[in-house]
Image 1: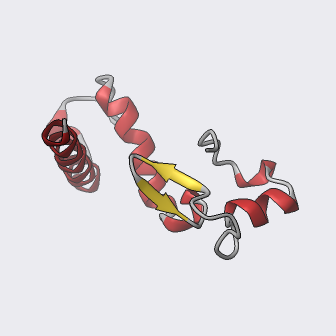
Image 2 (image 1 turned 90 degrees about the vertical axis):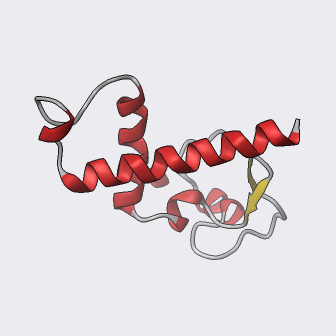
Length: 100
């Protein structure tokens, strides 16, 4: 399994083929995450905006907001994205707890 270093500029041409940058990887299950398998690089599956919201979620989890002020001072799209991501994280946690 790869470390999730997803900077496309650092991949060699061979790595791009192996990791599924332009088409499915020839390596079965090249990307694995919590039982999910992908044949394409995760950077290619999600949009740039989605990637930025996922990155923002990390900082949100540490108590940082993108704009000064409180929760009501944040852009509506940011608030909506954090709600969607948090719900999905909670769903995955619940599934893991039920599986144990």
